[in-house]
Amino acid sequence: MRLLNRLLYFIPAAAIAALLLLLVVVDGHGCSATGVAVDPSNKARYDHFRIYRVLLENEEQVQLMQQLENRSDSYTFMGHARHTNQNLTIMVAPQKIAEMTDLMERFKIGGSVLLYNIQDLIDKEDSTVMPKKTSPEQFDWQHYFHLDTIHKWLDLQVSKHPSILQSIPLEASYEGNLLKGVKLSKKQGNTAVFVECGIHAREWISPAVCTYILNELLTSTDADIQDLAENFDWFFFPIVNPDGYKYTFEADRLWRKNRKPYGICRGVDLNRNFESDWNGIGASSDPCAYDFAGGSAASESETQVLQKFLKENAHTSRIKTYFSMHSFSQLIMFPYGYTADKVQNYDDLQTIGERGSEAIRRSHGKEYLSGAMIETIYPSSGDSVDWVFSECGVPVAFTFELRGPPDSTNMFILPAEEIVPTGEETLAAYVAMLKAARELGYYGSGETHKGEL
Ligand SMILES: [Zn+2]
Image 1 (cartoon, rainbow, N blue to C red):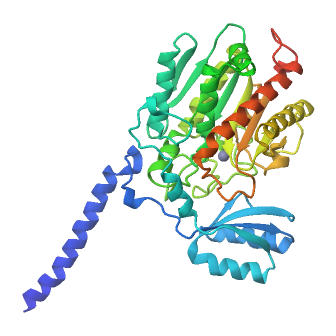
Image 2: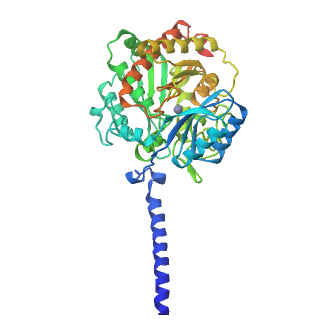
Image 3: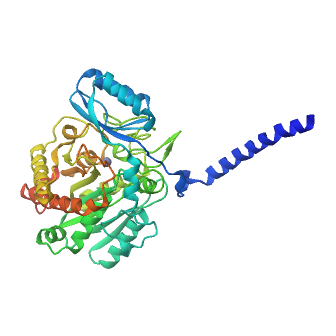
């Protein structure tokens, strides 16, 4: 009897030990460092997660929201509570909806629920996501595509247009994926435009618009677009955060950062990791935060290869224009993000940005606000556009926040049917902005005064 008791005690203990061993082994071979796909049943879910839009009207409300963000990861803030008269979008986990309702009542916070179930949007979007093994010949702008297909589509374009298109496979991300880019050049002596997309993983419209515009430059018969293709060189990097992008397809649709581990959390916000006022205002030193700036300036391999490439090519390839493509909020912004000091060519950039907004309005009637980054969205430091402007002397540098509007009910989950119109209006903005910058003397032959800020 005593022996039986011992056995009964021993068997569960042994089973637990074996299970623990199994978990360790599985984790060792799992998705952690190697980037192997997550089992679909383990994907992050957002059932009954809500999106709230609130207006902070007094200091007490601002402080309340700051405390809420610091104390609980059940509230995901888009931006941070900073000042009164500020609109703020917050994603709230279902178990906190009663608490949120109570807080809004007690502190008299005005606002509304923009969306009652984020998972519904993700499920709906699923039918517009093409399978991982989709061939590049099936590529289009009615669907969203995995990293592999986009990379193969770029290779296909290079093979179709060998005399004008060149592959630039930069190595490498933390998980060993390429930062794949292309250079389009039809003649000598052009200044160049650098288009950086997909630095934030969940902003799927960014890579989609990037490939749309590249395709238009390669195939359109429109005179304005042919002019751009002919008289500028173009660098396109559709996905500069490939590990994060992959992760949004395979594990968590709302992931933003790269995938490098930092203790119990993962990921650096690559658009806070550049060597420009690094880890200053609008960035976090907490590895679990969505805007974690990294272990040090340019700590991430993705940032390092981009900075190196831009340093080496800004002058030799005459990169005078830089577009960093994000979503959402419908903004066209120029430096700085980290200080209210005005850049030397503030008035010019204001004019160029406004021309972009006007072109977008004429295209499909969407309203895009234009201005310096710190004035239009929120303070940020260590971002690519501030860095490329300050450190590489690229004088025409803009960050786009594409569709939808600031009070969007889709956030980063823009329906695939909006890819083409978003691409069309963005290309119209490029046409207008490059024309304006050309008129202002930024692309003059030889080294102009304005091109050498
Ligand atoms: Zn972004």
